[in-house]
Image (cartoon, rainbow, N blue to C red; front, side):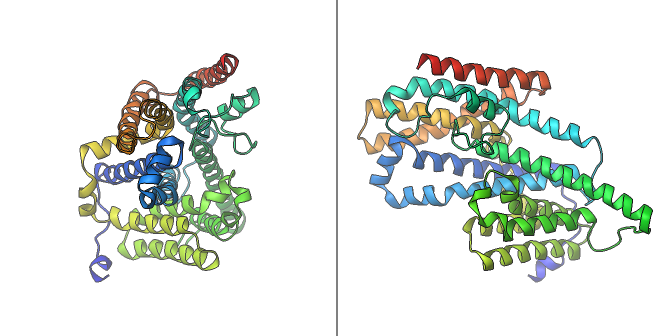
Length: 389
């Protein structure tokens, strides 16, 4: 540990920092795609029969890559909302609305594709458990508003629950940080308190909320449609941001210690592999972002590109998996080599489709008009496909 104790103050460029984050996103996105390929559809059954150990690992452990996304989401939220521990008070409701637009436009576009593909592949995959039932109006509206989990509606596509949770977490964090700003102003005016101490009020609150989530809400799956269930990992990502940007090595190690303390307490109370991964990711993020050499391994153009388009890939990959499953099962229903080749094809085509969605939709500047158009398009496409089915 001695060589790390003497680390210099962070001086990493934005390019190096984004290379590391893009690389982590790319790997996490790939893990999620392979988890869904191993979990859903006839290709997953063929893989399990041929290589049960590989299949079981992908099903049980690859899904935990979601924790990496949660930590990175918290890091990026803190970098945007309170990079030095004090909340930026620039139109919080506008920030929340902007986040909704950025999330929902490509999300709704991808779901339009999914509901159409569902109808197309149903003759081949109707008994696979992979194809959603005909969507209802309330189900479609709930998805368009990112409320499907809260309202108990069946998901139209694998993994889209995360989009709703991401928006909840961002909105929750924004309002919580704004609250600390006004509380600090009140305390300064009434009691002359100037907030001197090892942590700012916003940082203390984030630490407390992360602890509350890890030690309480995250232990009860009844809360898994709400941000409080996931805020432990997200909050550790916020702590990692403040550690990575700390003004000295001593303060950076303070943040690593706080993340480690949260992780150990949470695991001692109730062991959860996903929390171990979240804690390790947050701690490694602090250390890696303070050592420029640590980013060189992921400063590879294809990896960075996949990281940049990872959200679009994540959104559209299940539609691609549906199509490839239907194709392979109709032509080579019992072929192990073709099942494995089909999975590899689905992975490659998912990246291609995600790149198209990124260029055509996500990369365009979202507005409330484009958001409404795609939300209405999702509801309309869902109703039309239900009538045609």
